[in-house]
Amino acid sequence: MENRTPGKADRSKLQFPPGRVGEIAQFIFDAAPRPVAEIAFAGAIGFMAGICGRAYNVFGAGLNLYILLVAETGVGKEAARTGVSKLISALKTSTATLVALQGPSYFASAQALYKELAENPCFLSIIPEFGLKLKAMAAPHAPAHVQEMQAAYLDLHGLSGHGQSGAGMRYSDKTKNVPLLQSPALTILGETNQPNLFANVDETLVTSGLLPRFIMIEYLGDQVELNENHHLVAPSETLLQNLAATMAQAQGIVSRGQVCNVTFSPEAKAVFDAFERWTRAEINSRPTEVARHLWTRAHLKAAKLAALIAVGCNFHTPQIDADTARDSIEFVQKQTVSLIFKFSNGEVGAVETNETLRRDMVLKTIFSYATTPFDELPKSYSAIRQLHARRIIPLSYLQKALSNMACFRRAPGGATKALKATIENMRENDELGEIPKRQMVTEFGTNARAYETKNPTIPRSFIPTKPEVFFEH
Picture (cartoon, rainbow, N blue to C red):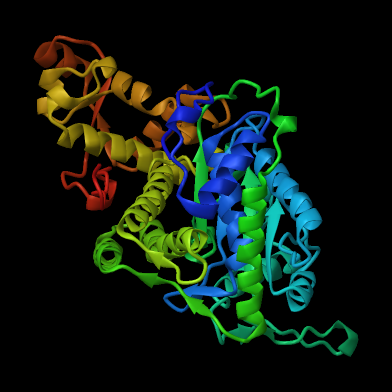
């Protein structure tokens, strides 16, 4: 998929995947009041995973997905949910083999989730306001039932492979017991806006393994123009027949106690082998725990996404081709890099009261300033060449570089007050030294306030270098 100009719904630039996934995405897009490609794609892969998550495997794992759809309020996130509902309603009237592929959007407890999976071991659950649920899980003293739900999500994600079982529950009251689940394939499509997600998620949800399990699909554009005829759009008979045939095939595989393993063309296998080596190198070289954990599951997420597309192209003998391999890897890699950058730039978490984060952002800015060639510094920051040569940074540069960062912008009293307090704390801790005004005037011809770090070394973890990309197009 390509990004479109914000505010436009340019169908000519859409590049949905081939096969059923692309057909579903195109229907959701066309039926949306405000069509957005990212939202349509999220609904499409969730729908396909709800059909195929248990019957098909790749690398020994089921094709269930955890998807996080992130977009601002008012841009039309609900189009994924309504598009899926329209497809299911149309299928109910056209086929007798319809499975209950859409599960509840709310679970009161982990026990309720396990019981649902005991009755229907493969379904899609579309959960609105999922960012608030992640916030509850990230709380330092989360209630027991919230901790149990997080543990359930962690456990269930990896149990969908053929022959795997787990997640049974036993109580003193036997009527509450949940039997051992056989290859449960739970797919989640969680909807959230940016503030509810990024202001409330912290590193604990990464290091616990929960956030790395999600494919994050983020739409950053504006509200697009209204499609006034969206309510007239209906799925074609060809699409319904294709989906019914795919569902019947998946049901038949499961009913026979079998599984269909998605294969790779030789070229696609070489691509995924190279990506596995690349992610392993990233994991072993990353300076932060967040990056290490986020890259850990990138290879499997890309393989599951590619496998779903392959099943949508040929549900009898699905095989991942080289183009699908590259596109899926690039898609997962981009969302992983985006999330790593949000953590490294202080855009994630309850940052308004995080003084440690503000101190780190000041140091990162100073170290980036000191190690970047003068001519490559942002022109709008008005750096002074003589100061840069001595690794002395003006206060005005810090203000321009940091004022829009969430940890300063959202701080009590605003960015200016927060930056002043952070600098004073760092001076008291002997981390920063202010250049005397007399020296500034006599040596540099300016009375601007400026600082230098007392630590001459530059920790690698503070240098905001962008990770190399696996594919360049």
